[in-house]
Image 1 (cartoon, rainbow over the protein chains, first blue to last red):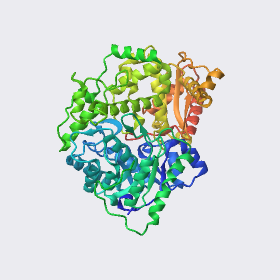
Image 2 (image 1 turned 90 degrees about the vertical axis):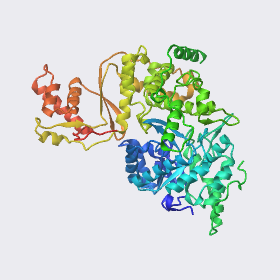
Image 3 (image 1 turned 135 degrees about the vertical axis):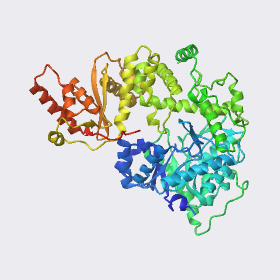
Length: 298
Length: 332
Protein backbone atom coordinates (compact mmCIF):
# COMPACT_ATOMS: atom_id res chain seq x y z
CA UNK A 1 0.00 0.00 0.00
CA UNK A 2 2.82 2.43 0.81
CA UNK A 3 4.17 2.49 -2.73
CA UNK A 4 1.25 4.03 -4.56
CA UNK A 5 0.39 6.37 -7.39
CA UNK A 6 0.59 9.34 -5.05
CA UNK A 7 4.30 8.86 -4.38
CA UNK A 8 5.28 7.65 -7.83
CA UNK A 9 5.17 4.04 -6.60
CA UNK A 10 8.15 4.49 -4.32
CA UNK A 11 9.00 3.18 -0.88
CA UNK A 12 12.29 4.89 -0.20
CA UNK A 13 13.01 3.87 3.37
CA UNK A 14 14.19 6.35 5.98
CA UNK A 15 15.39 9.77 4.96
CA UNK A 16 16.44 12.99 6.57
CA UNK A 17 16.04 16.62 5.68
CA UNK A 18 19.04 18.04 3.80
CA UNK A 19 20.35 20.98 5.83
CA UNK A 20 23.30 23.33 5.21
CA UNK A 21 25.31 22.38 8.36
CA UNK A 22 25.47 18.80 7.06
CA UNK A 23 26.62 19.52 3.49
CA UNK A 24 30.30 19.05 4.20
CA UNK A 25 29.80 15.80 6.14
CA UNK A 26 27.55 14.32 3.47
CA UNK A 27 29.83 15.21 0.57
CA UNK A 28 33.04 14.12 2.25
CA UNK A 29 31.88 11.03 4.19
CA UNK A 30 29.12 9.90 1.82
CA UNK A 31 27.06 8.30 4.62
CA UNK A 32 24.57 5.59 3.78
CA UNK A 33 21.25 7.38 3.76
CA UNK A 34 18.19 6.08 1.92
CA UNK A 35 17.17 9.53 0.68
CA UNK A 36 17.17 13.23 1.40
CA UNK A 37 14.31 15.67 1.42
CA UNK A 38 14.98 19.23 0.30
CA UNK A 39 12.98 22.36 0.91
CA UNK A 40 12.16 23.27 -2.68
CA UNK A 41 12.17 27.02 -2.12
CA UNK A 42 15.81 26.92 -0.97
CA UNK A 43 16.84 25.73 -4.41
CA UNK A 44 14.46 27.60 -6.72
CA UNK A 45 17.32 29.83 -7.78
CA UNK A 46 19.01 30.58 -11.07
CA UNK A 47 22.55 29.74 -9.96
CA UNK A 48 24.96 29.75 -7.05
CA UNK A 49 26.24 27.55 -4.28
CA UNK A 50 22.91 25.98 -3.18
CA UNK A 51 22.40 24.51 -6.64
CA UNK A 52 26.03 23.41 -6.86
CA UNK A 53 25.63 21.55 -3.55
CA UNK A 54 22.34 20.05 -4.68
CA UNK A 55 23.89 18.77 -7.89
CA UNK A 56 26.64 17.07 -5.92
CA UNK A 57 24.10 15.48 -3.59
CA UNK A 58 22.04 14.33 -6.58
CA UNK A 59 25.04 12.45 -7.95
CA UNK A 60 24.90 10.16 -4.93
CA UNK A 61 21.41 10.23 -3.45
CA UNK A 62 17.70 10.16 -4.15
CA UNK A 63 16.20 13.56 -3.38
CA UNK A 64 12.53 14.30 -2.76
CA UNK A 65 11.14 17.83 -2.94
CA UNK A 66 9.12 19.29 -0.11
CA UNK A 67 7.72 22.78 -0.49
CA UNK A 68 6.73 25.40 2.04
CA UNK A 69 5.27 28.18 -0.09
CA UNK A 70 2.98 26.83 -2.79
CA UNK A 71 0.11 27.80 -0.48
CA UNK A 72 -2.39 25.43 -2.05
CA UNK A 73 -5.12 26.81 0.21
CA UNK A 74 -4.71 30.47 -0.67
CA UNK A 75 -8.00 31.72 -2.10
CA UNK A 76 -6.41 33.85 -4.79
CA UNK A 77 -4.71 31.01 -6.60
CA UNK A 78 -1.27 29.73 -7.35
CA UNK A 79 1.73 31.87 -8.15
CA UNK A 80 2.73 31.03 -11.73
CA UNK A 81 6.34 32.10 -11.23
CA UNK A 82 6.55 29.77 -8.23
CA UNK A 83 5.24 26.90 -10.34
CA UNK A 84 7.64 27.69 -13.17
CA UNK A 85 10.64 27.58 -10.87
CA UNK A 86 9.31 24.49 -9.11
CA UNK A 87 8.99 22.71 -12.42
CA UNK A 88 12.57 23.60 -13.34
CA UNK A 89 13.71 22.14 -10.03
CA UNK A 90 11.70 18.96 -10.61
CA UNK A 91 13.55 18.53 -13.90
CA UNK A 92 16.81 18.82 -11.98
CA UNK A 93 16.01 16.51 -9.06
CA UNK A 94 13.77 14.05 -10.93
CA UNK A 95 11.72 13.77 -7.77
CA UNK A 96 9.06 11.08 -8.30
CA UNK A 97 6.54 13.17 -6.35
CA UNK A 98 6.55 16.31 -4.27
CA UNK A 99 4.80 17.58 -1.22
CA UNK A 100 3.53 20.82 0.22
CA UNK A 101 1.14 21.75 2.99
CA UNK A 102 -2.55 21.76 3.80
CA UNK A 103 -2.43 25.47 4.39
CA UNK A 104 -2.52 28.96 3.00
CA UNK A 105 -0.03 31.76 3.52
CA UNK A 106 -0.49 34.62 1.08
CA UNK A 107 -3.20 37.08 0.13
CA UNK A 108 -3.19 39.79 -2.53
CA UNK A 109 0.54 39.30 -3.09
CA UNK A 110 1.52 39.58 0.58
CA UNK A 111 3.39 36.55 1.92
CA UNK A 112 3.32 35.43 5.55
CA UNK A 113 6.10 32.84 5.17
CA UNK A 114 4.08 30.76 7.58
CA UNK A 115 1.87 27.69 7.24
CA UNK A 116 -1.52 29.10 8.20
CA UNK A 117 -4.41 26.76 9.00
CA UNK A 118 -7.45 26.46 6.76
CA UNK A 119 -11.03 26.90 7.87
CA UNK A 120 -12.36 23.35 7.67
CA UNK A 121 -15.36 23.93 5.43
CA UNK A 122 -16.63 22.23 2.29
CA UNK A 123 -16.22 25.46 0.35
CA UNK A 124 -12.57 25.79 1.34
CA UNK A 125 -11.94 22.12 0.55
CA UNK A 126 -13.30 22.61 -2.96
CA UNK A 127 -11.10 25.63 -3.56
CA UNK A 128 -8.03 23.84 -2.27
CA UNK A 129 -8.69 20.65 -4.23
CA UNK A 130 -8.99 22.72 -7.42
CA UNK A 131 -5.61 24.35 -6.74
CA UNK A 132 -3.96 20.98 -6.14
CA UNK A 133 -5.29 19.65 -9.42
CA UNK A 134 -4.03 22.75 -11.20
CA UNK A 135 -0.61 22.31 -9.63
CA UNK A 136 -0.44 18.61 -10.56
CA UNK A 137 -1.45 19.42 -14.14
CA UNK A 138 1.24 22.05 -14.43
CA UNK A 139 4.02 20.17 -12.63
CA UNK A 140 3.24 16.73 -14.03
CA UNK A 141 4.19 14.90 -10.82
CA UNK A 142 1.98 13.54 -8.05
CA UNK A 143 1.50 15.80 -5.04
CA UNK A 144 1.14 14.79 -1.40
CA UNK A 145 -0.31 17.38 0.98
CA UNK A 146 0.96 17.54 4.52
CA UNK A 147 -1.12 18.29 7.59
CA UNK A 148 0.34 21.28 9.48
CA UNK A 149 0.75 22.00 13.16
CA UNK A 150 -1.74 24.65 14.15
CA UNK A 151 -2.39 26.95 17.06
CA UNK A 152 -5.75 28.31 15.98
CA UNK A 153 -9.16 27.11 14.91
CA UNK A 154 -11.91 29.00 13.11
CA UNK A 155 -15.51 29.48 14.19
CA UNK A 156 -16.42 28.97 10.57
CA UNK A 157 -15.11 25.34 10.48
CA UNK A 158 -17.67 22.60 9.78
CA UNK A 159 -15.60 19.46 10.33
CA UNK A 160 -12.45 18.06 11.94
CA UNK A 161 -9.06 18.58 10.34
CA UNK A 162 -8.76 14.95 9.25
CA UNK A 163 -12.23 15.08 7.69
CA UNK A 164 -11.15 18.22 5.85
CA UNK A 165 -7.90 16.60 4.73
CA UNK A 166 -9.84 13.60 3.46
CA UNK A 167 -12.31 15.84 1.62
CA UNK A 168 -9.46 17.73 -0.05
CA UNK A 169 -7.35 14.75 -1.13
CA UNK A 170 -10.33 12.80 -2.42
CA UNK A 171 -11.65 15.74 -4.44
CA UNK A 172 -8.14 16.43 -5.79
CA UNK A 173 -7.20 12.75 -6.13
CA UNK A 174 -3.81 13.42 -4.57
CA UNK A 175 -1.71 11.92 -1.80
CA UNK A 176 -1.08 12.68 1.85
CA UNK A 177 2.17 13.39 3.59
CA UNK A 178 1.15 12.38 7.08
CA UNK A 179 3.12 14.29 9.69
CA UNK A 180 2.52 12.44 12.93
CA UNK A 181 4.36 15.06 14.96
CA UNK A 182 2.05 17.74 13.59
CA UNK A 183 -0.93 15.58 14.45
CA UNK A 184 0.31 15.31 18.01
CA UNK A 185 1.03 19.05 18.31
CA UNK A 186 -2.39 20.00 16.97
CA UNK A 187 -4.13 17.40 19.13
CA UNK A 188 -2.67 18.97 22.24
CA UNK A 189 -3.47 22.49 21.06
CA UNK A 190 -7.04 21.64 20.05
CA UNK A 191 -7.99 18.88 22.49
CA UNK A 192 -8.61 15.92 20.23
CA UNK A 193 -7.39 12.34 20.31
CA UNK A 194 -4.49 12.10 17.85
CA UNK A 195 -5.24 8.43 17.19
CA UNK A 196 -8.62 9.47 15.80
CA UNK A 197 -6.71 11.50 13.23
CA UNK A 198 -4.32 8.68 12.30
CA UNK A 199 -7.19 6.22 12.11
CA UNK A 200 -9.42 8.59 10.19
CA UNK A 201 -7.40 9.50 7.10
CA UNK A 202 -7.54 7.49 3.83
CA UNK A 203 -4.47 5.31 4.36
CA UNK A 204 -4.24 4.24 0.76
CA UNK A 205 -3.40 7.85 -0.11
CA UNK A 206 -0.50 8.24 2.33
CA UNK A 207 2.68 8.58 0.28
CA UNK A 208 5.12 9.69 2.95
CA UNK A 209 5.36 10.18 6.70
CA UNK A 210 7.13 12.92 8.66
CA UNK A 211 8.43 12.58 12.20
CA UNK A 212 9.97 15.39 14.27
CA UNK A 213 10.38 16.87 17.72
CA UNK A 214 8.47 19.76 19.27
CA UNK A 215 8.55 22.12 22.25
CA UNK A 216 6.07 22.31 25.09
CA UNK A 217 5.09 25.78 26.30
CA UNK A 218 2.85 26.63 29.19
CA UNK A 219 -0.39 26.82 27.25
CA UNK A 220 0.40 25.25 23.91
CA UNK A 221 2.89 23.10 21.99
CA UNK A 222 5.01 24.62 19.26
CA UNK A 223 6.26 22.64 16.27
CA UNK A 224 9.92 23.60 16.55
CA UNK A 225 11.71 20.65 14.90
CA UNK A 226 14.57 21.09 17.35
CA UNK A 227 14.31 17.97 19.52
CA UNK A 228 14.41 14.21 19.16
CA UNK A 229 11.09 12.54 18.43
CA UNK A 230 9.05 12.04 21.60
CA UNK A 231 7.34 8.81 22.66
CA UNK A 232 3.76 9.86 21.91
CA UNK A 233 4.83 10.69 18.36
CA UNK A 234 6.53 7.30 17.94
CA UNK A 235 3.26 5.66 19.03
CA UNK A 236 1.38 7.57 16.36
CA UNK A 237 4.03 6.59 13.84
CA UNK A 238 3.73 2.92 14.76
CA UNK A 239 -0.01 3.09 14.27
CA UNK A 240 0.31 4.99 11.00
CA UNK A 241 2.58 2.44 9.37
CA UNK A 242 0.46 -0.38 10.77
CA UNK A 243 -2.44 1.14 8.85
CA UNK A 244 -0.59 2.41 5.78
CA UNK A 245 2.09 -0.22 5.41
CA UNK A 246 5.83 0.52 5.30
CA UNK A 247 6.02 4.08 4.03
CA UNK A 248 8.88 6.43 3.14
CA UNK A 249 9.70 8.16 6.41
CA UNK A 250 11.49 11.43 6.97
CA UNK A 251 12.92 13.00 10.12
CA UNK A 252 12.77 16.81 10.20
CA UNK A 253 15.30 18.67 12.31
CA UNK A 254 15.43 22.38 11.45
CA UNK A 255 16.70 24.30 14.47
CA UNK A 256 19.61 23.73 16.87
CA UNK A 257 20.72 21.15 14.34
CA UNK A 258 23.06 18.56 15.90
CA UNK A 259 25.84 16.74 14.01
CA UNK A 260 24.78 14.63 11.05
CA UNK A 261 25.32 11.31 12.84
CA UNK A 262 22.98 12.28 15.67
CA UNK A 263 20.21 13.29 13.29
CA UNK A 264 20.66 10.13 11.25
CA UNK A 265 20.67 7.97 14.38
CA UNK A 266 17.41 9.55 15.47
CA UNK A 267 15.84 8.92 12.06
CA UNK A 268 16.93 5.30 12.05
CA UNK A 269 14.90 4.67 15.19
CA UNK A 270 12.01 4.38 12.77
CA UNK A 271 13.58 1.14 11.52
CA UNK A 272 12.39 -0.98 14.45
CA UNK A 273 8.80 0.10 13.80
CA UNK A 274 9.12 -0.53 10.07
CA UNK A 275 10.63 -3.96 10.76
CA UNK A 276 7.59 -4.95 12.78
CA UNK A 277 5.29 -4.03 9.91
CA UNK A 278 7.58 -5.64 7.33
CA UNK A 279 7.51 -8.86 9.38
CA UNK A 280 3.74 -8.92 9.13
CA UNK A 281 3.81 -9.03 5.34
CA UNK A 282 2.10 -10.26 3.24
CA UNK A 283 -0.76 -9.48 5.61
CA UNK A 284 -3.01 -6.94 4.09
CA UNK A 285 -3.00 -3.63 5.91
CA UNK A 286 -6.30 -2.98 7.67
CA UNK A 287 -8.92 -0.80 6.10
CA UNK A 288 -9.57 2.67 7.42
CA UNK A 289 -10.62 2.53 11.06
CA UNK A 290 -13.66 4.50 12.12
CA UNK A 291 -12.95 7.66 14.08
CA UNK A 292 -12.80 7.13 17.82
CA UNK A 293 -11.61 3.54 17.84
CA UNK A 294 -7.91 4.21 18.43
CA UNK A 295 -5.94 4.10 21.62
CA UNK A 296 -4.49 7.13 23.37
CA UNK A 297 -1.12 8.26 22.04
CA UNK A 298 0.07 9.65 25.34
CA UNK B 1 18.93 45.03 28.82
CA UNK B 2 16.29 46.87 30.87
CA UNK B 3 17.61 50.15 29.54
CA UNK B 4 17.28 48.95 25.94
CA UNK B 5 13.67 47.92 26.42
CA UNK B 6 12.84 51.24 28.06
CA UNK B 7 14.36 53.12 25.14
CA UNK B 8 12.56 50.93 22.64
CA UNK B 9 9.27 51.69 24.39
CA UNK B 10 9.91 55.42 24.37
CA UNK B 11 10.79 55.32 20.69
CA UNK B 12 7.65 53.40 19.86
CA UNK B 13 5.44 55.77 21.89
CA UNK B 14 6.81 58.77 20.06
CA UNK B 15 6.06 57.25 16.64
CA UNK B 16 2.63 55.70 16.22
CA UNK B 17 2.92 52.42 14.31
CA UNK B 18 2.10 52.45 10.63
CA UNK B 19 -0.51 50.08 9.26
CA UNK B 20 0.50 47.45 6.71
CA UNK B 21 -1.40 47.70 3.39
CA UNK B 22 -3.69 44.74 4.11
CA UNK B 23 -4.80 46.08 7.50
CA UNK B 24 -5.31 49.57 6.09
CA UNK B 25 -8.01 48.08 3.85
CA UNK B 26 -9.91 47.03 6.99
CA UNK B 27 -11.11 43.62 5.86
CA UNK B 28 -14.17 42.18 7.56
CA UNK B 29 -14.16 38.51 8.62
CA UNK B 30 -17.08 36.63 7.02
CA UNK B 31 -19.47 34.67 9.24
CA UNK B 32 -19.11 31.57 7.04
CA UNK B 33 -16.70 30.21 4.42
CA UNK B 34 -18.76 28.56 1.71
CA UNK B 35 -17.24 30.23 -1.33
CA UNK B 36 -13.88 31.32 -2.70
CA UNK B 37 -14.83 34.95 -2.03
CA UNK B 38 -15.58 34.23 1.63
CA UNK B 39 -12.37 32.27 1.97
CA UNK B 40 -10.52 35.25 0.53
CA UNK B 41 -12.11 37.62 3.02
CA UNK B 42 -11.26 35.35 5.95
CA UNK B 43 -7.65 35.08 4.77
CA UNK B 44 -7.41 38.84 4.27
CA UNK B 45 -8.79 39.37 7.78
CA UNK B 46 -6.32 37.00 9.39
CA UNK B 47 -3.22 38.05 7.45
CA UNK B 48 -4.03 41.73 8.04
CA UNK B 49 -3.91 41.04 11.77
CA UNK B 50 -0.77 38.91 11.55
CA UNK B 51 1.16 41.57 9.59
CA UNK B 52 0.41 44.38 12.03
CA UNK B 53 3.46 45.46 14.06
CA UNK B 54 3.88 44.12 17.58
CA UNK B 55 3.92 46.38 20.62
CA UNK B 56 7.31 47.37 22.09
CA UNK B 57 6.95 44.44 24.49
CA UNK B 58 6.49 42.10 21.50
CA UNK B 59 2.77 41.45 21.92
CA UNK B 60 -0.18 41.89 19.61
CA UNK B 61 -1.67 45.38 19.62
CA UNK B 62 -4.69 45.78 21.87
CA UNK B 63 -6.74 47.66 19.27
CA UNK B 64 -7.71 46.97 15.68
CA UNK B 65 -7.19 49.59 12.94
CA UNK B 66 -10.62 51.13 13.58
CA UNK B 67 -9.86 51.56 17.29
CA UNK B 68 -12.11 48.71 18.44
CA UNK B 69 -10.69 46.13 20.88
CA UNK B 70 -8.49 43.57 19.14
CA UNK B 71 -10.09 40.90 21.30
CA UNK B 72 -13.43 41.59 19.66
CA UNK B 73 -11.88 41.49 16.18
CA UNK B 74 -10.08 38.19 16.85
CA UNK B 75 -13.24 36.66 18.33
CA UNK B 76 -15.01 37.08 14.98
CA UNK B 77 -13.03 34.25 13.47
CA UNK B 78 -10.65 32.70 16.03
CA UNK B 79 -12.13 30.03 18.24
CA UNK B 80 -10.85 30.06 21.85
CA UNK B 81 -9.99 26.91 23.77
CA UNK B 82 -9.79 26.11 27.47
CA UNK B 83 -6.27 27.61 27.73
CA UNK B 84 -6.11 30.41 25.18
CA UNK B 85 -8.58 33.06 24.10
CA UNK B 86 -9.11 34.16 20.50
CA UNK B 87 -6.69 37.05 21.01
CA UNK B 88 -3.91 34.81 22.36
CA UNK B 89 -4.29 32.28 19.56
CA UNK B 90 -4.07 34.94 16.88
CA UNK B 91 -1.16 36.51 18.73
CA UNK B 92 0.91 33.33 18.33
CA UNK B 93 0.84 33.85 14.56
CA UNK B 94 1.40 37.61 14.84
CA UNK B 95 4.54 37.06 16.92
CA UNK B 96 5.83 34.21 14.75
CA UNK B 97 5.45 36.40 11.68
CA UNK B 98 7.55 39.22 13.08
CA UNK B 99 10.17 37.06 14.75
CA UNK B 100 10.69 35.05 11.56
CA UNK B 101 10.93 38.02 9.22
CA UNK B 102 13.09 40.16 11.49
CA UNK B 103 15.44 37.20 11.98
CA UNK B 104 15.70 36.94 8.22
CA UNK B 105 16.57 40.64 7.91
CA UNK B 106 19.20 40.23 10.64
CA UNK B 107 20.74 37.40 8.63
CA UNK B 108 20.77 39.35 5.39
CA UNK B 109 21.94 42.71 6.78
CA UNK B 110 24.40 42.03 9.62
CA UNK B 111 26.54 45.02 8.62
CA UNK B 112 23.59 47.38 8.80
CA UNK B 113 22.78 46.04 12.25
CA UNK B 114 26.39 46.67 13.31
CA UNK B 115 26.09 50.28 12.13
CA UNK B 116 22.68 51.07 13.60
CA UNK B 117 22.77 48.92 16.70
CA UNK B 118 20.15 46.32 17.58
CA UNK B 119 17.42 48.68 18.70
CA UNK B 120 17.51 51.01 15.69
CA UNK B 121 17.90 48.11 13.29
CA UNK B 122 14.84 46.50 14.83
CA UNK B 123 12.86 49.73 14.47
CA UNK B 124 13.95 50.07 10.83
CA UNK B 125 13.02 46.45 10.13
CA UNK B 126 9.58 46.87 11.68
CA UNK B 127 8.89 50.06 9.76
CA UNK B 128 10.17 48.56 6.51
CA UNK B 129 8.15 45.35 6.75
CA UNK B 130 5.08 47.31 7.74
CA UNK B 131 5.33 49.52 4.66
CA UNK B 132 6.61 46.76 2.40
CA UNK B 133 5.48 43.33 3.57
CA UNK B 134 7.04 40.39 1.75
CA UNK B 135 5.77 40.12 -1.81
CA UNK B 136 7.78 37.07 -2.79
CA UNK B 137 7.48 33.37 -2.03
CA UNK B 138 11.21 33.37 -1.36
CA UNK B 139 12.60 34.89 1.83
CA UNK B 140 15.69 35.57 -0.26
CA UNK B 141 13.86 38.60 -1.65
CA UNK B 142 12.75 40.04 1.70
CA UNK B 143 15.29 42.90 1.64
CA UNK B 144 14.81 43.76 -2.02
CA UNK B 145 12.99 47.04 -1.31
CA UNK B 146 14.95 48.10 1.76
CA UNK B 147 17.07 50.55 -0.25
CA UNK B 148 13.92 52.11 -1.68
CA UNK B 149 12.39 52.37 1.79
CA UNK B 150 15.52 53.92 3.28
CA UNK B 151 15.59 56.57 0.56
CA UNK B 152 11.93 57.35 1.19
CA UNK B 153 12.29 57.43 4.97
CA UNK B 154 15.96 58.11 5.79
CA UNK B 155 15.07 59.00 9.39
CA UNK B 156 15.19 55.29 10.25
CA UNK B 157 18.94 55.35 9.56
CA UNK B 158 19.42 57.99 12.28
CA UNK B 159 22.73 59.82 11.96
CA UNK B 160 24.16 57.18 9.62
CA UNK B 161 22.11 58.07 6.56
CA UNK B 162 24.77 57.69 3.87
CA UNK B 163 26.67 54.91 5.62
CA UNK B 164 23.47 52.98 6.30
CA UNK B 165 22.19 53.49 2.78
CA UNK B 166 25.53 52.33 1.34
CA UNK B 167 25.48 49.28 3.58
CA UNK B 168 21.99 48.31 2.43
CA UNK B 169 23.15 48.41 -1.21
CA UNK B 170 26.35 46.55 -0.31
CA UNK B 171 24.56 43.75 1.55
CA UNK B 172 21.78 43.41 -1.01
CA UNK B 173 24.51 43.28 -3.65
CA UNK B 174 25.94 40.21 -1.97
CA UNK B 175 22.59 38.45 -2.18
CA UNK B 176 22.41 39.26 -5.89
CA UNK B 177 26.00 38.15 -6.46
CA UNK B 178 25.35 34.91 -4.59
CA UNK B 179 22.66 33.44 -6.82
CA UNK B 180 21.78 35.56 -9.85
CA UNK B 181 22.16 33.63 -13.10
CA UNK B 182 25.40 33.31 -15.04
CA UNK B 183 25.07 33.78 -18.79
CA UNK B 184 27.47 32.55 -21.43
CA UNK B 185 30.54 34.78 -21.12
CA UNK B 186 32.17 36.67 -23.95
CA UNK B 187 35.80 35.73 -24.42
CA UNK B 188 38.66 38.19 -24.90
CA UNK B 189 39.17 36.89 -28.46
CA UNK B 190 35.54 37.67 -29.32
CA UNK B 191 36.06 41.25 -28.22
CA UNK B 192 39.31 41.60 -30.15
CA UNK B 193 37.69 40.40 -33.37
CA UNK B 194 34.55 42.55 -33.12
CA UNK B 195 33.87 46.00 -34.53
CA UNK B 196 33.97 48.27 -31.43
CA UNK B 197 31.55 50.72 -33.02
CA UNK B 198 28.90 48.00 -33.21
CA UNK B 199 29.67 45.61 -30.36
CA UNK B 200 27.27 45.91 -27.45
CA UNK B 201 27.71 43.61 -24.51
CA UNK B 202 26.61 43.50 -20.93
CA UNK B 203 27.70 42.36 -17.51
CA UNK B 204 26.70 39.13 -15.87
CA UNK B 205 23.54 39.62 -13.80
CA UNK B 206 25.50 38.55 -10.72
CA UNK B 207 28.04 41.38 -11.06
CA UNK B 208 26.97 44.33 -8.88
CA UNK B 209 28.64 47.73 -9.35
CA UNK B 210 28.59 50.05 -6.37
CA UNK B 211 29.71 53.61 -5.91
CA UNK B 212 30.12 53.93 -2.15
CA UNK B 213 31.10 56.76 0.16
CA UNK B 214 32.71 54.30 2.60
CA UNK B 215 35.12 51.35 2.28
CA UNK B 216 32.50 48.80 3.18
CA UNK B 217 34.48 45.89 1.79
CA UNK B 218 37.12 46.38 4.49
CA UNK B 219 34.51 47.04 7.17
CA UNK B 220 32.61 43.91 6.24
CA UNK B 221 35.74 41.77 6.34
CA UNK B 222 36.58 43.16 9.80
CA UNK B 223 33.05 42.39 11.03
CA UNK B 224 33.22 38.83 9.71
CA UNK B 225 36.62 38.31 11.31
CA UNK B 226 35.33 39.51 14.64
CA UNK B 227 32.25 37.31 14.33
CA UNK B 228 34.37 34.27 13.60
CA UNK B 229 36.59 35.00 16.62
CA UNK B 230 33.46 35.26 18.74
CA UNK B 231 32.04 32.03 17.39
CA UNK B 232 35.23 30.08 17.79
CA UNK B 233 36.22 31.43 21.19
CA UNK B 234 32.83 31.71 22.84
CA UNK B 235 31.81 34.76 24.80
CA UNK B 236 33.78 34.01 28.00
CA UNK B 237 37.02 33.31 26.17
CA UNK B 238 36.45 36.31 23.94
CA UNK B 239 36.27 38.58 26.95
CA UNK B 240 39.27 36.89 28.53
CA UNK B 241 41.27 37.27 25.33
CA UNK B 242 40.35 40.94 25.21
CA UNK B 243 38.68 40.80 21.81
CA UNK B 244 37.10 44.20 21.55
CA UNK B 245 33.68 45.00 20.19
CA UNK B 246 32.33 46.69 18.25
CA UNK B 247 34.39 47.12 15.09
CA UNK B 248 34.90 50.90 14.62
CA UNK B 249 32.66 52.38 11.97
CA UNK B 250 34.50 53.23 8.76
CA UNK B 251 35.56 56.75 7.91
CA UNK B 252 34.36 58.23 4.61
CA UNK B 253 36.46 57.16 1.63
CA UNK B 254 35.02 57.07 -1.90
CA UNK B 255 35.07 53.45 -3.00
CA UNK B 256 34.16 51.92 -6.34
CA UNK B 257 33.39 48.28 -6.00
CA UNK B 258 32.24 45.25 -7.93
CA UNK B 259 30.63 42.42 -6.00
CA UNK B 260 30.81 39.19 -7.95
CA UNK B 261 31.31 35.48 -7.55
CA UNK B 262 33.94 32.97 -8.53
CA UNK B 263 33.34 29.23 -8.06
CA UNK B 264 30.15 30.12 -6.18
CA UNK B 265 31.93 32.22 -3.56
CA UNK B 266 31.21 35.95 -3.32
CA UNK B 267 34.11 38.38 -3.69
CA UNK B 268 34.59 42.15 -3.71
CA UNK B 269 36.86 43.86 -6.22
CA UNK B 270 37.93 47.50 -6.06
CA UNK B 271 37.75 49.30 -9.40
CA UNK B 272 39.53 52.33 -10.78
CA UNK B 273 37.14 55.16 -11.77
CA UNK B 274 37.62 54.65 -15.50
CA UNK B 275 37.09 50.89 -15.23
CA UNK B 276 33.95 51.51 -13.18
CA UNK B 277 32.59 53.93 -15.80
CA UNK B 278 33.45 51.51 -18.59
CA UNK B 279 31.51 48.67 -16.95
CA UNK B 280 28.56 50.92 -16.15
CA UNK B 281 28.38 52.17 -19.72
CA UNK B 282 28.49 48.64 -21.12
CA UNK B 283 25.74 47.56 -18.75
CA UNK B 284 23.62 50.47 -19.97
CA UNK B 285 23.85 49.27 -23.54
CA UNK B 286 26.52 51.53 -25.02
CA UNK B 287 28.72 50.14 -27.78
CA UNK B 288 32.28 49.23 -26.90
CA UNK B 289 33.48 52.38 -28.63
CA UNK B 290 30.99 54.63 -26.77
CA UNK B 291 31.84 53.02 -23.44
CA UNK B 292 35.57 53.48 -23.95
CA UNK B 293 35.02 57.11 -24.98
CA UNK B 294 32.98 57.78 -21.85
CA UNK B 295 35.60 56.13 -19.64
CA UNK B 296 38.68 57.68 -21.23
CA UNK B 297 40.69 59.90 -18.90
CA UNK B 298 41.76 63.08 -20.76
CA UNK B 299 44.96 63.46 -18.74
CA UNK B 300 46.26 60.10 -19.99
CA UNK B 301 47.82 59.64 -23.40
CA UNK B 302 45.77 57.58 -25.88
CA UNK B 303 48.46 54.88 -25.74
CA UNK B 304 48.31 54.60 -21.95
CA UNK B 305 44.53 54.61 -21.96
CA UNK B 306 44.44 51.91 -24.61
CA UNK B 307 46.83 49.83 -22.54
CA UNK B 308 44.57 50.21 -19.50
CA UNK B 309 41.51 49.19 -21.51
CA UNK B 310 43.34 46.11 -22.78
CA UNK B 311 44.36 45.12 -19.25
CA UNK B 312 40.89 45.64 -17.88
CA UNK B 313 39.15 43.71 -20.62
CA UNK B 314 41.60 40.86 -20.12
CA UNK B 315 40.70 40.78 -16.42
CA UNK B 316 36.94 41.17 -16.98
CA UNK B 317 36.99 38.41 -19.57
CA UNK B 318 39.06 36.15 -17.31
CA UNK B 319 36.55 36.67 -14.51
CA UNK B 320 33.72 35.93 -16.93
CA UNK B 321 31.98 39.23 -16.22
CA UNK B 322 31.17 40.13 -19.81
CA UNK B 323 28.29 38.51 -21.61
CA UNK B 324 26.02 39.11 -24.56
CA UNK B 325 23.11 41.47 -24.16
CA UNK B 326 19.78 39.83 -23.44
CA UNK B 327 16.99 40.77 -25.79
CA UNK B 328 14.46 40.18 -23.02
CA UNK B 329 14.97 41.23 -19.41
CA UNK B 330 15.69 38.66 -16.76
CA UNK B 331 12.87 38.96 -14.32
CA UNK B 332 13.15 37.75 -10.74
